[in-house]
Image (cartoon, rainbow, N blue to C red; front, side, top):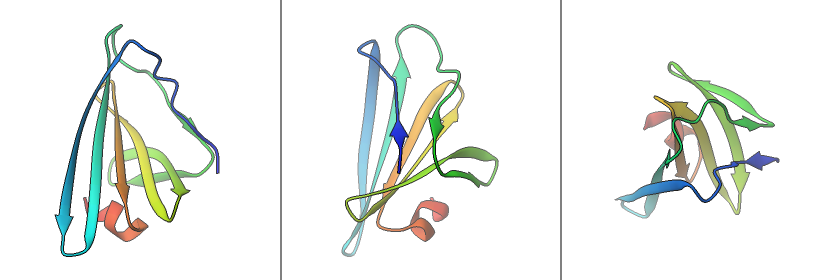
Length: 86
């Protein structure tokens, strides 16, 4: 799978991790210092609710990236069902 986040050096990242028993979910928000992000790209498009993004499988994890209000939101979870439940 191709996963491309061209965020450059002019970016801030906020991250948090949640646990539910043995399962964890990592949520990251990438914020540009140069204004808002206007697009992201990937090989596996997926719509979750009102959010269009891209799904990636990496190291046994499922990662969903999408744009929300000019920021890149990344949800990293054990599986696609967990990503969709966030």
